[in-house]
Amino acid sequence: MSVALVTGSGGLIGSEAVRHFAGLGLDVVGIDNDMRQEFFGAEASTAWNVRRLADELGSAYSHHSIDIRDRDALAKLFARYGRDIAVVIHTAAQPSHDWAVRDPFTDFDVNAGGTLNVLQNVREHCIEAPVIHCSTNKVYGDRPNSLPLVELETRWEIEAGHPYEQGIREDMSIDACLHSVFGASKVAADVMVQEYGRYFGMKTACFRGGTLTGPAHSATELHGFLGYVMRANMERRTYKIFGYQGKQVRDAIHSSDVVSAFEAFFRNPRSAAVYNLGGGRHSNTSNREAFALAEQITGVPMVTEYVEANRIGDHKWWIGSNEAFQADYPDWKQVYDVPMIMREIHEANVDKWVPQA
Image 1: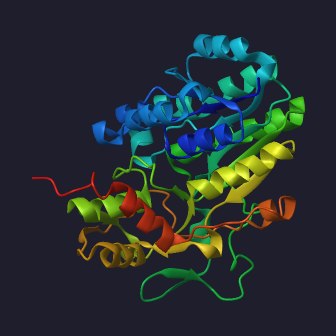
Image 2: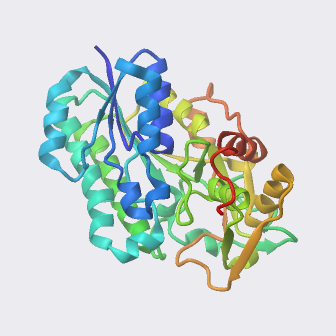
């Protein structure tokens, strides 16, 4: 038996990884205790996704409602499967800047402590298994805001000819900048994943994601940019724009493209690898551009409210470079762009996201 163990298996990337690796013929063990509902309320619950996985995959999927902070429960599960575990995909996290400020202990315990718990269990029970860690571009803090940017009609854009014109690379410093409490906890996790790779010779990768998106997102105001743009439009919610004239730019990568990158690493793993992974120049948008596209898709105007103050540590412009990953894995191809992503989100939720009475 070959097992893929996926933490955060009810979430966007976790559930996509469950389906993908089950499709490769692995038995999938999922860990998810629906803390997303605790973080963001009932509308963000992942329970519906867990039920769907169980229905679709049957005996190929085994679900465990375990908190990754619970070392004893986690150790028992790892011991149960032992060296049958062929890969560990760690997507469980507290993902919000705003929420982290409210409860920094929980944020750090989940993001940093939970990651350490996963790594140590791999070391003790299945050290040959590659560890794929969902990190974030927020490990760079607000350093991207120091780049020379030009204000255009609908977006901020980097100066032509800059070394990062085709996307920010992994050589950007993470030091001497503002990270937010969330960013700091993710830095701790990211560095620990690298350290277990170098110090213990384990096969580990940090994928520093841009805007990860797709139809399986339980989109809510504090997390899930493109999903929440579509949800706000379809449900006639007021979308709050936080600063930067709504011209802040994000690259967006579909969950399917993310997990195909995970598969590439799984098949040919390295130690202590670090990769930016996002939409890059292929798939990026500003708030204003995303609003226009949502209106085009539905024929319904956005309802927005502008808040002058930007979120602390928020990026004004982020387009990451996938160059390092593509150099190591040249067969990986990115499929989705922003219009494809938003149309798919709309189609997947057209019967669910309707105006509230």
